[in-house]
View 1: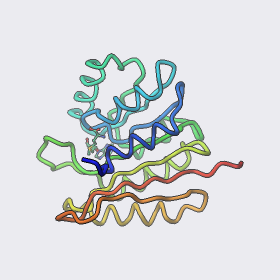
View 2: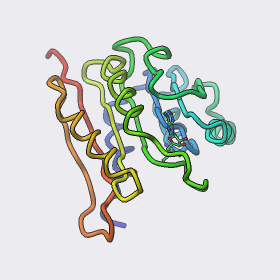
View 3: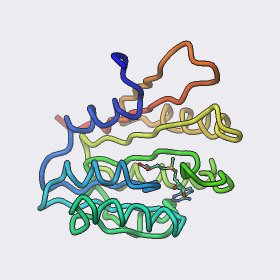
View 4: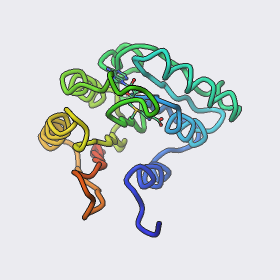
Length: 188
Ligand SMILES: C[S@@+](CC[C@H](N)C(=O)[O-])C[C@H]1O[C@@H](n2cnc3c(N)ncnc32)[C@H](O)[C@@H]1O
């Protein structure tokens, strides 16, 4: 498609900020698509901290990384992203990525929850470097996803030291997924 969907646009935008050797965080590893992209982007001197609460997701991500030969660049953690502050130092990450919702291919019983998502976003604000990017893909069309999306938008919109952008495709049948990019201002 000529028009880019937000999940693809995310990678295009991230390529502009991630440099070889950087530390980045994938807060929802899922099936490992974003983790593998990030591992490629940071190069062999960089590191990805990839988090997911489900064992199934961690296993799927590990398998994808092994197939791509990228496993040495990634630390996998089976825990809640609300614990991110224990896994990465303040001001250390160039990019932090959330792809909310459920693990594709599963029964959708376990989806991200607004309460823990907001805790994780608060931790991200601390872990992110100045000039770094916090990216969140929200799914308002999923049950429960509409409230979560609204809370995420309100939280990010209230951050004083960030510039915020929202990207979505118009004219879809149900509330469209959208991408939020919060860019932490640098001192320059
Ligand atoms: C849409 S999927 C992520 C897709 C993934 N980025 C990819 O490229 O395949 C959402 C993931 O969030 C995970 N998740 C839900 N609650 C979580 C939490 N509190 N902490 C970390 N991961 C969570 C789910 O297990 C699921 O795998």
